[in-house]
Image 1 (cartoon, protein in one colour):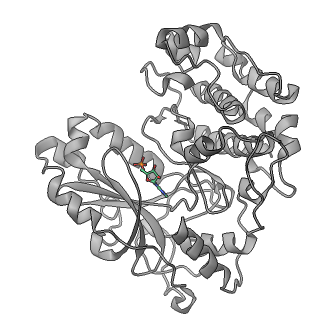
Image 2 (image 1 turned 120 degrees about the vertical axis):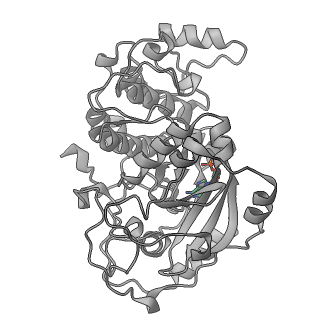
Image 3 (image 1 turned 45 degrees about the vertical axis):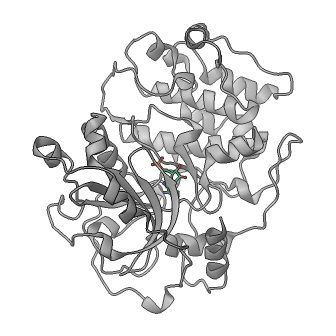
Length: 416
Ligand code: AMP
C-alpha cells in the first residue's frame, strides 16, 4: 500500500493545530501482540498522523467548516460528539485552503471509463427511478450536484460485485475518499434494487468511528457512485488470511470496537445481520470499520424472518427459520471472536453444509486447548442457543477479557 504510506508520510510532515483528538477506539496496529501465535509486528505510534488523516482524509468536525454540499457538511467522527444525524444545518464558511496537504492518491488506471465502455446497460422504468440515487437532491434543501468531474481520480482500491472502487480526492474542498461504483443494470439483474437503496439509506445516516461513513452519492445513466470514507489499511479479511489468526490482544481490541459499533447501530434500530471478516475494513490506524450494510435492516421493534447472511455466522434461530432480532448480531460477534482467535469459524464443516447447520443448531462449540478460559467464557456467553440468554453488548464491553486488553485512556461512551 505504497500510496497510503505516502499519504502517511506527507501528513506526518504537517503541523497540527487546534484539533481535538478523536475519541476513536483502540488501534491494533499500534500494539505488539502478546501472543506467540501472532505475526503482528509492532508499529510506531501514529497519533499525530491519525489526527491529520482524520482531518484531511475525510471531512472532520473539528476544522473550519468548508462550503460544501450537505452530504459532506458537518460530518462527525464519533457518535458521542453528535447527537443528531441530520447534517443540513451547519453554516458554510470558506475552508482554510492553505492547510490542505497534497496527498498522493496514486495513479489512476483509466479503469472507470474502460469498464463503462464494456459493462452495464441503461435501465428504464421503475428500476431507473429506484436507482436514481443522488444525495444532493434527496434533501429538503438541495445543495449541489456531484459528478465525476468533481474528483481527482487515484489508484484502484478493489473490485466489488457491482463495480470498482477508487481512491479519489474531491477538488473543492480537497478530501480523500473511496469512490465506489455500482452498475445499475447488474443491480437490477440481481434484483437487489431495494436492498441497495436500503444499504445506502442506512449507511448515510450513521456516525460512529467504527462504522464506515458514507458521505454522499450520485448517479449517471448506468452507474451509482458512493462517496465513502477511505479505509487506509484496507480489508481486515486480508490481514486475517495473512496471519491465519490474531493474538488475544488484537482480537479483543477489534471485538471491543465491534461491540461499541453494534450498540450504536442497535440504538438506531439497525440490525447488521451479516457480520463477518469480509465485511470489515481497517482505518489508517488499524481501527475497525464496519463497511457493508447489504443485509442490514432498519427494524424498529420489528422481528424478521428472512434467511440471510453468511452460513458460518448464522445463529440457530435463523438456521431454524424462526423469527430473529438484533440478538443475531450478538451471536455473530461470538463467531467473529472465535474466528479471529482460532482462524476459522466455530461450526465450520468444509465437507458438509448440512453438518454446519446441525452444529449451529446444537451449539456444538469446541475450543482448542491454547485458548484462554477468559475468552472461552466470553464466546460461550455470546453463543447461546436462546437469543435472550446471550451476553448483552454492554456487558461485552465490561467483560474482563475485553477490559484487560483495552488500551489505557480509551473510554466507551456506550458504557456510561
Ligand atoms: P466492495 O465492493 O465493497 O466489496 O469493495 C471492493 C474492494 O474495494 C474491497 O474489498 C476493498 O479492498 C476495497 N474498498 C472498498 N471500500 C473501500 C474503502 N472505503 N476504503 C478502502 N478500500 C475500499
